[in-house]
Image (cartoon, rainbow, N blue to C red; front, side):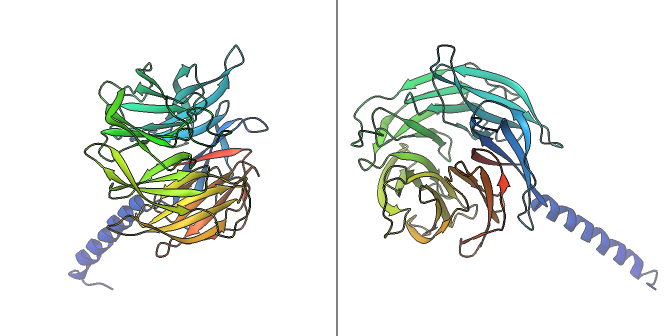
Length: 386
């Protein structure tokens, strides 16, 4: 039995233990919430939600969170309370069209409630929100266009403020580079610029951001050229913001560039393959690119070879070294994402209607595929959310 003098110490230690446990649970949640974007051409009905067990990597059965036609891309407001979805649809005249939709996220049920929708006359494929939560930039692959929308205080979309058409020389791949194809928007770490990859022109465009008014204008140097025929698709900044990595869809490479934060321009200095050197075939296209939360590793996906490439990022130099290339666990890995704690990677397979999970080794960056998959028809986007 504790003495009267020991009892206050025991109570204090117990209180400290509880505080520590609460802090640990706040820092390391037991479950990760995620949303899945899909194409609704077969049995999918829109955006699905699921939870990932932070200890085991087990994924709950995905459930419908919002019914929507072809929500092919999802992104979050920095508050974590609003989700934005790209909708690929048909206009009344039969031509491809699109819209951006804002959804409020219910923090307890993860249900999505539509706030509003902004319709565009052009099809869209990707969108990003700036760090202040004041502007959303969306791009059109089919039209080669860039649009900006101001965001209201509650996360709703305001009317489009900027509409920019890409023009100029095209890349040498006549089949795929037949016209400008804007493919992604990536905000700089300091929020001064947004960078748009154009697959059709082998360029990354640089736009100065006026977040307060929700507008864009071309930077003093409006674009940086990439190797002809590479087809820039998606981009990610290094953890220190000194380098930008671009996955090149057409030739199976990742291009590393020095980033000049003063001007927003890029200087490519390295290209590394996403495929094994002995790979034979001409049907592979790359898709997604992600930097590990610890900043030490980079991941890219191959569609056709159906694999994930893992690279080490050299500190202070930003150079990439290939670590491994592993099967993705399904067919056509169009998109994947890393959990906020960096312990798990969830990959969506458009071609096999499945989602798979990998354990990530924090020391080596290597991936271990967990047994089993979750069924989600034509899943094409993975978004972790608070």
